[in-house]
Length: 351
Image 1 (cartoon, rainbow, N blue to C red):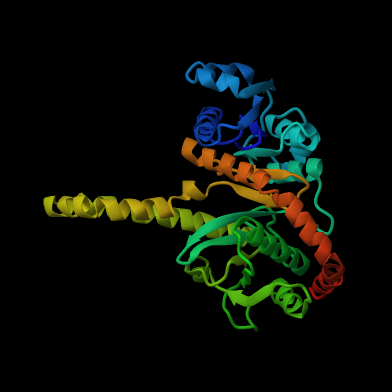
Image 2 (image 1 turned 90 degrees about the vertical axis):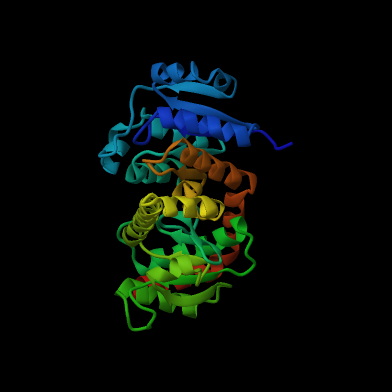
């Protein structure tokens, strides 16, 4: 039997909160019956939803607050006046040891700012990064940053490479994951100064990282490397483009199979194979990106996801807690520290 785990939830974060959030927690409970939840949000709105799912009352504790972070709130504004918001209180529960991890589908910038302020970063890490998994021909590819840091220098990219490599070993179980820097071409002369300087630092580093070099956008789903490192601006665009492409092809297939009786018959014959493809490429299956580099488990769910997607984000948080991810990355960073610091300084100075 799995050991009990408590996860704090920002019940008011996301496009369709709190309905989707509560339904997602209910779905997560089916797969993770040993997990308990602290829900931060408007008690009246959350309690009404419990009337639909009475079994939720036994696994959830509601902490009332009538403040929530909106999608257009500025991070600085939340840091100044959002300490009683559902997002802040949910993160604070991790800092206080009341919960082992936090999940929110709220404003990404605000969540990153709050999580960094409340939880702090691990020693040797300047900025946390959002890491997620992309489906690939070879399995899964870790991509970071997915939107936490719009502007990154060479030092930031270097640190992301370290965190992503440790993530791939700790979570995906890869013995020696390969790392690539996302660029506009694979040639060494291409790219901006930050990318080229980070590449030089990784090549010159004495760290046990298998650095592949530059990769392009099509390499992500090709599985060319196990870890793809980029700035948050580019990473977020890549993420949204991939999600949009999946929806586009799904729409095209539905239209094609509905065009004629013969096409509908073809769908019946191919239904089982198409279902496997749908499951493999469903963005909801990969929902739940972790803020790497923090002194605590914090998972960001897509704001527009449904209950199934939010449940998967909860699952990511629980898996990271269960596998002791933060302890592993902290240990790895401490062991790498003596070599990482001077190399990082060289990367930063090469801008």
